[in-house]
Length: 461
Image (cartoon, rainbow, N blue to C red; front, side, top):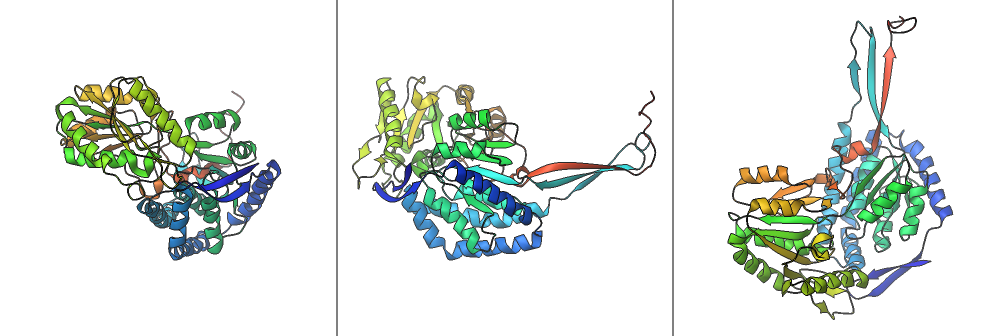
């Protein structure tokens, strides 16, 4: 079966690919395993030299990288630049993070365990599998490839079938920098190929995608370590003492950035009634004046656009008022939908209850902050939330009440260097307290009894 890379701005087919077969997936894992056995014995100083060269390669080919991201996903140039330059910075970040990983030593009660100590070692997982999305075709792949390889692993990577070209380019950059050719294996195809990778003999899996795909992985991956970063239904809360201009600017961007095709984008907004009219007027003015091809791009596919459009129509049938946008654009035969602001009256609609992957901003007017918190938490998702208020102390208290792994105060979201510490609660993922470097390592405890004496608790009792 063939998959196609398509430019969503104009619907033009860029290239076709055959799905990787089960035999090819198996071979990719085997080759990665062989490459990893050598790579793990490569000194950190030698790995570091290759990563510093990788930075130079990315800088040298930056124009090409940016052009391909834009062509294959329709993203605006500033959004593409954010992907690239954050990744370049991540090289130094993860080199520093890994340099801090040291074995630790522990001693025991000398009466019970004389001359006994234990060492905790951190070793690579082995072959790490990656199943990653199209909405950030360069950022997540590189943000996993870098810490995985820094820490001594090999990788088998399946990019989204919608961003195959960028996925292949990721590997090409490492090869040009001098990394072993078989250390990164790229398999291409749709979800069937992803399922093959899940059932293969990889040692750990990182996946970024939908909740439904995450559940399927958990059913089939067995007793092996897996890390899932799944969808979100992020809520923005605007309180009566908020800077309304700041809130309007931030929420307008947070809801429509990357055409809203972002797990952490604002998908629900709860505004206290005292400032509702002013906020709605200002945020609508911003969104109404966004320009296609300059401020926002197309949807990745027609099917994605139609799904969001159907939810807008359903909201209208349920007494929602579309204040602006929500209209299809006949632009270059691409997949364009104007950004919308929608005043919602009934909340038991898909636009509110489900993750809507599009440039819509549903607004619900609430009486007070307590009601806003309750409504924000009324979701199976728990990825991110944001609070807008002039009282930072109050915002910090509310942040502890919000049921999400990420909370931003007076902005909609921000990412940590290296896309580290990104974690969701509830259906938004398997939360972790570890950085990506530590997630790429496994623990080995080695205890040593040097007393040459038997233990007091051994037989006979």
